[in-house]
Image (cartoon, rainbow, N blue to C red; front, side):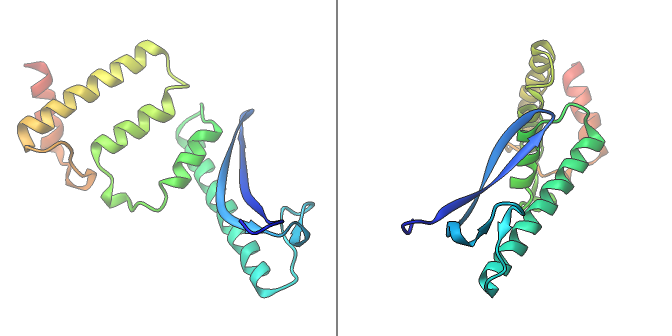
Amino acid sequence: MPAGRWYVYARIVVNKTKCELGMKQQINPSDWNEAKGCAKNKSDELRRFSRYLEVVRAKLVRHYQQLRLGNEGINADMVKEAFLNDDKPAEQHSLMWLIGYHNEIMKTVLAPGTMKNYRTTESYLQLFIKKHYGTNDVLLRKLAFEFITGFEHYVRT
């Protein structure tokens, strides 16, 4: 890092929980407007940097609102995780990724016994996928009704 430059972080605060997100950007302290939380408008480069920060803020707010709609027990880490996974196209998400993501964000919200049940279901799904598909995972876009009924039959027998 060049001498005298600061790294820029986004602080995420949700329901009294906090976390930070590194922006992988640096700025001279004299170019930073602390009151507004953005770069001063002294040059085109600083204006572009401020616009970048506004885009990040907007995405964080969007993820917060989406999580809030689907889950009452959200925290700052859940918003950060959603933001970090934003660049992965939804059509490339897999079932095991989704289960891992769910378990990671819910482990602070759900009771240990409930989490044990989710982990057990995860292990059954891994066995089912390996046995019936010959692979370790399946893309969400490849899932069909037959997968659900097949898994139900697998668990019941």
